[in-house]
Image (cartoon, rainbow, N blue to C red; front, side, top):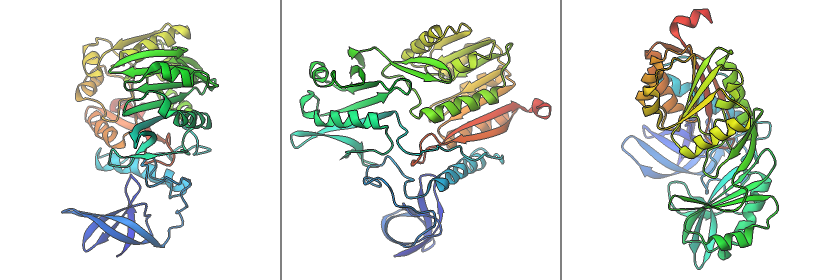
Length: 423
């Protein structure tokens, strides 16, 4: 069956119409004529498989990865990079309008100079099959594993260590299923391995400890974090701040774009030495600590105690004394605060902010609110509430943290509506 593709979803699926119904076609592009096979019929739409491209879009390119469309890690490799950036901008714009009811200008997405080999961290799934172990990614919408020999998104050093791990999987005393994380420092190139599952630590150390550049090995078993070898943390440097990263702490995996993100937040914050700042969902302080250099006082709130300990230690290490970090859920800690803040920075997980957080932030009457998000949908939802409570969206800057995928990071500046004309 043939279908004219007229649109595209944020996941990179082509959209057309057949027999009066919308049809979603993964890996098809607008302007193409596609030969498709209907795979799923729903009440209001169809899902189809792309069989052949009869007439190709000028944006179409050959996917560089042999696993593309099978491993689920990427969804944009079939379109050129400029089209990827255009689509991500449109996704942000559409979500702001459709969910947030906001007609605002969205800046062009800031892309990468080289959209490959940018990840300094990878999480591998490992499973035993036919008496031997396989390591790879999960097939989309399933728990089935596809073994991967090479991933074009991870750094060469992370891939080299991953290949070494793969060669020794049968010797590491692994359980039937587990997860292995490999991280690389962008500051000095050192590597960390975190084995999650009931793992025989002795065998892991025996086969990995001598690997060049591997500075740290951890095992995580039923919530217990066990340091097996080397340094207790991984050194990083971002925006002029030195960090030590514990094994489960979150840190941006795309260093070049992380530098840019912090720079955009600093520009939006416009901090002075008398300003008091709050950052919700602060993690290890990768935004908090750079902002502290320009602010009078800054408070960070984070639910993961391990990250809070890292943040405090990182502040001490960098001789930053105007920071305080509190451990606890933002929806509990922030409403209990009596402080007033000039600037508030929010960097929530994909689910966005709880209503209690938004209400508490508004009550502190900050002049500016900066909202960083990796989910345009929940960000638009929360912005709508802020705007109903007296704030206006002033700037929207998307950043491409993850080329070849549908993910987009977005930094939004809001300002109190009564200050809008004074800006």
